[in-house]
Image (tube, rainbow, N blue to C red; front, side, top):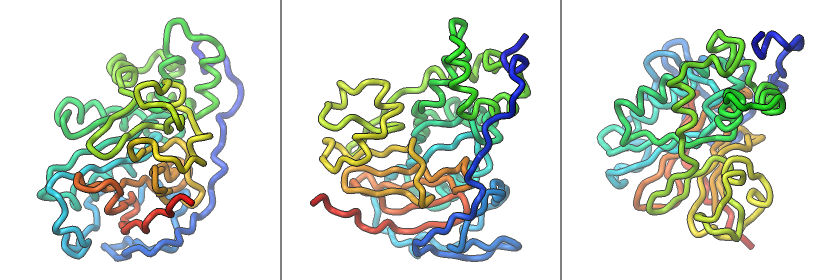
Length: 303
């Protein structure tokens, strides 16, 4: 008997089936039957842009024609939202045309959303063909899935994963047990690194523990921490780019010492990317899977 055959209950339901009002000042435009404005994003619009993206504004209009030739796009928690990922990558490629662009995805590719299988296939393809351009970090959901699929798993490992969106992952693969996922998919999930650094920033899934050096951070904190990290305004020695905690506004949360780019893609919000120039610490531009792009306001300075 498989794991799912032992259960006789429905999976956890998403309680965020409400329109999300984005108060920021965005560009808006039309493309065919699509209209992209700041008026709201609705839960059912998971597949808003499936084909050619409508980014027709010229690059100088966006305002960084003098930016360095090397840029980095950091992408938030994907959670099985393949269509949003596909749309966001297309937007990033358009904006970054002519520049050496790197992508850093900060984890949580699986669970909750409808297309975990296609997301993992995307990761495998990019690792095989564009390994130098795409960096995929591990999230706490990859950690939970790895434990649930292991031969020495406990009942608690299974239930913790299943109760946090594992049911949608099983549906995506058409299987009844996480151990039945393809071997190459599980191998990739288990091989993902915990962190990545460049000249100006540290990229992790959840955050870091304030006052502890990066080299001494525990895996538990890198994957799971919320407090005291989220409320800390101290310098961490590097600007931290993270996700893990969905923002209530469905907008990125930019602070002087960190950036949260988990905008709740699996809860009805967009999937968001931050564009970084290699000659500056803070992001130059935000892009979202629903066709919006905007410049960030300066973060508040610590008191």
